[in-house]
View 1 (cartoon, one colour):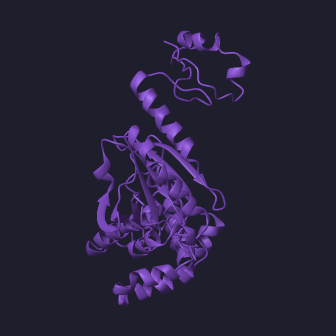
View 2: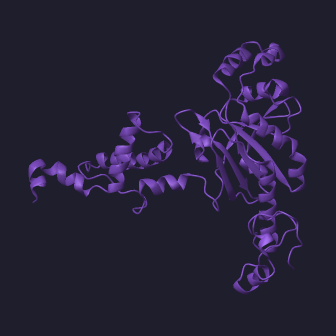
View 3: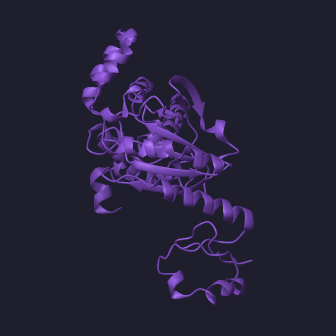
Length: 323
């Protein structure tokens, strides 16, 4: 035996037989309970420990609790790979959700499955300032004074309403390409209703809002899509494009100070629709009507042999597509 094992006895031997992934999970869980790390991966750890507790309980009943901690269901899993399995990933199914949304001034329960068969863009927004919550708490007690209360609410965030209104004003363009736009925020549906009734000139969204606003009060949707800032309880400016089969095709995540582009979102949706329909790929700065590339070594030469410098340096002029 090594000096270390002779020194500490059986406990050291038991520790050495335990899988590294289990040991790292224990350490990270202890750190999380002590508040030393963010809880972004807590759901993954809970799944892991639910399995471990189940096996340990079974061992205790059979008087086998002296055995080392069990292996995970997949022995090649590490804490990082467990986390990656839970985060939204391009080419993988988009995380499912179900929540209450504000649509045309009313509350409605919607889910991801409701929009299968259509393209849709999922837009994550920042919640409102804390002073806004004071008015929302009064809203529950005095629903008949909704107009008066919401007219006093002016502490909304600054960039998010410009994004939502820009997407809302472009809904007709999205409908032309069979695309649904959904907004998600980490506040309640009551907050969304108050925000929707606030006039635009006062930082609200106005009564003509048609874009559905989904309440993510539990933070679960933002967490599963990987945009949640755990310490603050707010979501980064994430944009997710999902195809009719429910597969995630594109992810854009901005830091809080900078908004997203409606035109770029429409361009990306059209590009994915084109590639799915024709099987060709879209080069940089592609726009509808521009040249595309055949996805094979010989066919691609047709594009490169006819494309000059002006067509590869960011020029966005419309060109005829190669047949």
